[in-house]
Length: 107
Length: 121
Image (cartoon, rainbow over the protein chains, first blue to last red):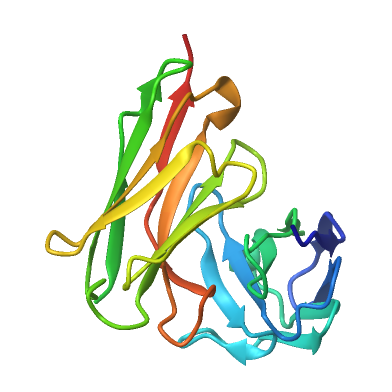
């Protein structure tokens, strides 16, 4: 299985800040990388697919980039509603593994 | 409008077989390139990809669970069923079904609300 490692595991930021989450794959996944947001008690929500494509209806404050084994996910202009756990997922090779998640707290 | 909803027993005993049903609307598994995936999440832990079934009945399972999982579909009822044999306490999790984006093989654009399954004597 391809291992996905996210960093950091958790972070705290203030309203208006910009934060960056990284995701490293144990092997090349090209651009087959998704980012999801999961709020407490809710199902995950697709934000970014294929490394940098914004899912329909998702605000452009969420941005993804990268290819191969290293990916970044940026959230700009943080708001309290961005409090969530964020997951990366590769869909290059089955099983389509997820990262361990990054918990974001808004101070 | 695409919706999915999981249903299951809530609680099962160790060694029993777990059966979960995903009932969906807004798309059809008779349509080319439609796929449904199962994912689970133990309490407080990360997401785990379990299995996928495609419009043409192609199926793929996580290798670590392959011997215990079976996924099937009833396209006329818009349902996908996941069975897991010989459950154990570590199978306690919220189980989700999700639709795969039609232009993708693995991007999950619509999710069910999840159903919590507790494995306990």
